[in-house]
Length: 274
Image 1 (tube, rainbow, N blue to C red):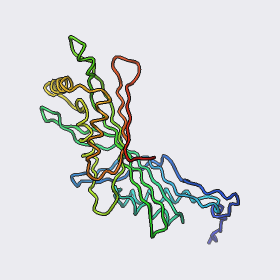
Image 2 (cartoon, one colour; image 1 turned 90 degrees about the vertical axis):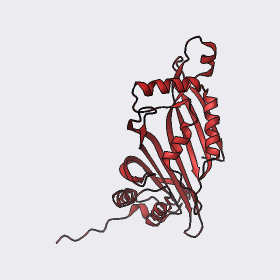
Image 3 (cartoon, rainbow, N blue to C red; image 1 turned 180 degrees about the horizontal axis):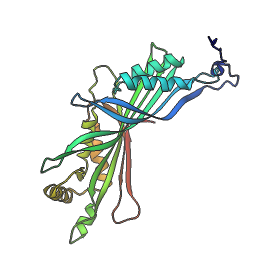
């Protein structure tokens, strides 16, 4: 029988430089995670995880394997909800830390119907969960930001006004970071609802699938609803100001101009830092 060898734990050794580190951990760890859809069904997505804890000034390092172990355990047996306090509290306990942070970048699929025929196909939206906690187990400061990137169509009001025929239009993106209300009994912010609300700010939504009657509808809807990026971001601001469960937000609209070699862009934020 081979006797177990006791190996030195270098990470636990003392550091004498007196520098407390804000975040130490792993980045771009790929993992499948399970999410709850608005309809109650579960969706498995391919996520890139960034996970970290704060490191005290007296400790040389952290045990990096514990991040991967926890992410793997949750991937197999748990659902990643909008309230990630239990996940972060577990990380602080495992790594004997006073703060923890996790980011999960993923593509989330929503079944989307064409506007006229009603035929549907899944459409992917770039999303991110960004959660952090600081505290001693008695008093804790928790923050959760839900980010979505929503593709839209926008048509230029100036082009429509000055042209005898048509107007230039292009695909654009609304990128939103929503700081969620994490108090007890706060409304749930579903990704599906956030996407639908932001699409209302566009000249017209974009779709994964269109037949000719649908394409006619989309083209005419854009033409009747021209918007600059300034219009889109102001309308998106009005949507998020009144959105239940959102305390603050950061917005960016970028249009991939069809008649220029540059993009049009606008940004705005309210009650949001970081």
